[in-house]
Length: 448
Image (cartoon, rainbow, N blue to C red):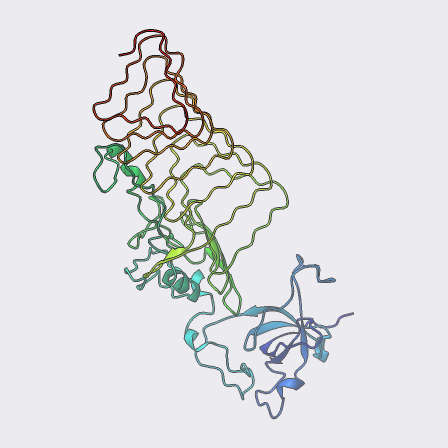
């Protein structure tokens, strides 16, 4: 029914299919001349692409059959047998190009792009897949022999690798009166709060965070080795890798812009986004981090910090539970507004140091309950203004005023009552009592 099976091989010279079916114009060896004046490219037959059984090839379901580029060698068969008018592409094959394209000659890329001039005399197999298994020995600036591979994706990742990313540290502050004048806490146990090193982005492929690292784990004895690393790359430079190299197993996906995601041999995952990121979760999200976490927002430039704003909005409740210490280091101003009530309980001591002025406004009542002693130490003057009555009750004795001036202004009545014992008023200098009204002194005993 179908006649004799006739196969062929040739070169793709045009892939711009007006029907968008993935067809390519192919110049076929033995059927078409390499002279374009005898057989122009636009007169070559359209060859249909075959698709794998995993692709439905129906209504967009499956994989789009676009792969060959101008200059790709393809092979297939003629669906119409010896008539040789309906070619079908069943596969592609590469080689080692030994010269650049000659655009005006058949069996070449008419655009002159492929093969790339950087890949002449080099196997068409992706550079990432041609590893020899040897660990790279890079220099400090990122240059050097990297496993015999100079793939653009690796070069970009190494040159844009982030180093010395700063982390947050706790603030230094006065611990007690014996603290040094610079405000540091003289406690060696607290050095872990300040001696925190910045972190580096891990090296691509083989891991490690130091520039000189050539191994990530003791079990990692080598890097990618041919033919264990399976690579897929697009024309613009998108890359995917599935590396089955023993002790160096990886999964890698990279956008040509430099954004990538890599899972290294020990399960370490690196995600780097060179642009913006948007993440939306319509349902619940649980996060469990068993180790330490460093989050750095913004970056510090030569002149001043390049501030990156961080905004967090909670429509519900926020619960934070900290088993260790809580350190908050604010280099600028801090403003807190609470629309409702605030309740705070400190089970041990509290200390507040204010190096500037302190202004407290209470628009209603204030109650202070102290079960033990209260000590005020004022280096300057004390001024108290009470616009209504003052009621002071002393359980044992009355106040002793220190040397210096003491002025009491009473806008209403002033009464000293409930003195069940003796009351002694001693003035070492002059004493003046002035009144614009009557002055009454009632003594039931002697007055001297």
